[in-house]
Image 1 (cartoon, helix red, strand yellow):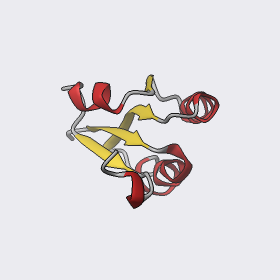
Image 2 (cartoon, helix red, strand yellow; image 1 turned 180 degrees about the vertical axis):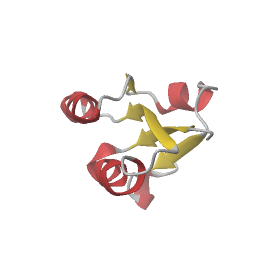
Image 3 (cartoon, one colour; image 1 turned 135 degrees about the vertical axis):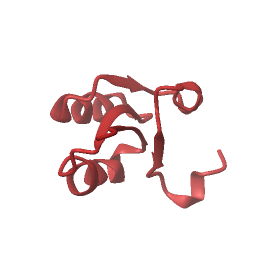
Image 4 (cartoon, helix red, strand yellow; image 1 turned 60 degrees about the vertical axis):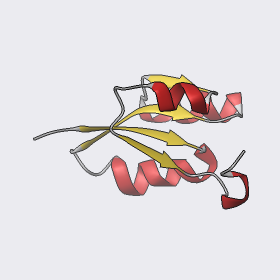
Length: 80
Protein backbone atom coordinates (compact mmCIF):
# COMPACT_ATOMS: atom_id res chain seq x y z
CA UNK A 1 0.00 0.00 0.00
CA UNK A 2 1.25 3.47 -0.85
CA UNK A 3 1.34 5.81 2.12
CA UNK A 4 0.62 9.44 1.30
CA UNK A 5 2.56 12.04 3.26
CA UNK A 6 0.40 14.92 4.45
CA UNK A 7 1.23 18.46 5.47
CA UNK A 8 -1.38 20.38 7.46
CA UNK A 9 -1.55 24.18 7.59
CA UNK A 10 -3.54 25.74 10.44
CA UNK A 11 -3.77 23.53 13.49
CA UNK A 12 -6.76 25.07 15.21
CA UNK A 13 -8.99 23.30 12.68
CA UNK A 14 -6.25 21.01 11.35
CA UNK A 15 -6.03 19.06 14.62
CA UNK A 16 -9.54 17.71 14.00
CA UNK A 17 -8.48 16.67 10.48
CA UNK A 18 -5.71 14.59 12.04
CA UNK A 19 -8.06 13.01 14.60
CA UNK A 20 -11.00 12.35 12.28
CA UNK A 21 -9.41 12.08 8.87
CA UNK A 22 -5.79 10.96 8.82
CA UNK A 23 -4.96 9.11 12.06
CA UNK A 24 -7.63 6.39 11.60
CA UNK A 25 -6.45 5.53 8.08
CA UNK A 26 -3.22 3.59 7.48
CA UNK A 27 -2.79 5.09 4.01
CA UNK A 28 -1.83 8.52 5.40
CA UNK A 29 1.11 9.81 7.39
CA UNK A 30 0.93 13.33 8.79
CA UNK A 31 4.52 14.31 8.11
CA UNK A 32 4.57 18.10 8.59
CA UNK A 33 2.43 20.61 10.45
CA UNK A 34 2.44 24.37 9.97
CA UNK A 35 1.03 27.06 12.24
CA UNK A 36 1.98 30.60 13.27
CA UNK A 37 1.30 29.83 16.94
CA UNK A 38 4.48 28.16 18.21
CA UNK A 39 2.82 26.67 21.30
CA UNK A 40 0.01 25.09 19.27
CA UNK A 41 2.52 23.87 16.68
CA UNK A 42 4.61 22.09 19.31
CA UNK A 43 1.58 20.73 21.18
CA UNK A 44 -0.12 19.17 18.14
CA UNK A 45 3.12 17.84 16.66
CA UNK A 46 3.99 16.27 20.00
CA UNK A 47 0.53 14.84 20.58
CA UNK A 48 0.50 13.00 17.25
CA UNK A 49 4.21 12.32 16.80
CA UNK A 50 4.50 14.49 13.70
CA UNK A 51 8.18 14.52 12.70
CA UNK A 52 8.35 17.93 10.99
CA UNK A 53 6.99 21.30 12.04
CA UNK A 54 7.30 24.74 10.52
CA UNK A 55 5.91 28.24 10.79
CA UNK A 56 6.60 28.86 7.09
CA UNK A 57 3.92 28.00 4.54
CA UNK A 58 6.45 28.61 1.78
CA UNK A 59 8.80 26.00 3.26
CA UNK A 60 5.97 23.49 3.36
CA UNK A 61 5.08 24.18 -0.28
CA UNK A 62 8.70 23.61 -1.28
CA UNK A 63 8.91 20.23 0.50
CA UNK A 64 8.82 17.64 -2.27
CA UNK A 65 8.33 14.81 0.26
CA UNK A 66 4.68 15.84 0.74
CA UNK A 67 1.93 14.36 -1.41
CA UNK A 68 -0.95 16.38 0.09
CA UNK A 69 -1.17 19.81 1.71
CA UNK A 70 -4.38 20.24 3.71
CA UNK A 71 -5.10 23.95 4.22
CA UNK A 72 -7.16 24.37 7.37
CA UNK A 73 -6.96 28.12 7.85
CA UNK A 74 -10.01 30.39 7.75
CA UNK A 75 -10.98 31.26 4.15
CA UNK A 76 -10.52 34.97 4.83
CA UNK A 77 -6.74 34.54 5.12
CA UNK A 78 -6.08 32.09 2.27
CA UNK A 79 -4.60 34.78 0.04
CA UNK A 80 -2.18 36.18 2.62
